[in-house]
Image (cartoon, rainbow, N blue to C red; front, side, top):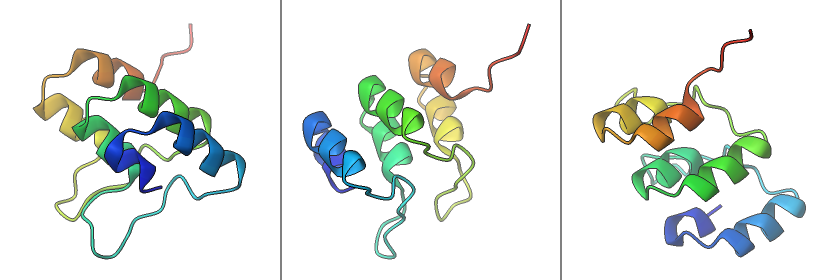
Length: 88
């Protein structure tokens, strides 16, 4: 989902609808679409990817998840979207 790199939400939606792998991790990159959405501070892309089944536990080459990177950036909205929600 290279559309994540440019934050093209409409293109992302079309690719997901066509069956694109939301967890694709290119060998020449150190991030997957969810991690890239966090790095871009794209809350809408994060929501779209999570709704499409993106795995939150995938890590980059340094062993960091999207949530780890959101915490490093102190991005409270991204953190809220990525943290496990408690069932009450």
